[in-house]
Image: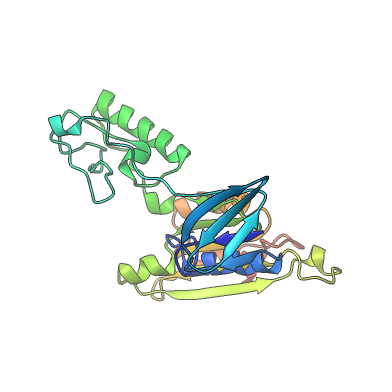
Amino acid sequence: MNLIFRKKTILNEFDTDIGSRVLYYAQKKGIKIFSKTFLKKIIKKNDKVIALTNKVSIKSDLLIYAIGRSPNTKNLNLTNTKVKLDENNAVKVDRNSRSNDKTIFAIGDVTNRKNLTPVAIREAMILFDYLSNKKNNLKLDYNKVASAIFTQPEVGSIGYGEKDLKKLKIKYKVLSTEFSPLKYSFYKSQKGKVFIKILYCPRTEKVLGIIYIGESAAEIIQSLAISFQKNLYLKDLSQTIPVHPTSSEELVTII
């Protein structure tokens, strides 16, 4: 199996540890990695597909081409409105999902805020409450929305990554660990590694972000999202009694 991509690493919108470690684990499984590689031409020859790039020629049985996505606003005839778009053609909205045209609201992927189905559903619920009751009690903090990447191993994350914190000029410290789960201790190969990273404020020790890479990461980050929603501090983790033996117990023993 081969993986080619245009940039230096993958998953560039996330913390750098996510992309680099997903690639590391992929290489461990025998996947050939070609970074800074551009697809120039595709040739179909008999039952094979040949991908010609700026570096190598790759012959394969199957080609999967992931080209990304962008807000689909071209056919909305927005030129007839006061709606403004950003550099990615996403609809600009305020905290109440109202566009520059006072009569037009936008939610979901077309706003390019947090492109997840549950987020769009929650945006719709909040907008309905706002329009029907003219109340503004419910707010959606996009930084507190957990997300998962269903790679092998899985990735779960919530809050800020290091790139976000540097961009926002927020001071932070990092706690991290990588280990083999106890249940794989009798395996000769390096199977099932887990990586945990916690970013926190040095002064208050408030947790700013959590990254979990490993088996069942999506389930674990979903549970953490409940605590993160109410503001989570290092002392909350350190004062929690761990369930032993589990991989997630490292979240509370890492302190």
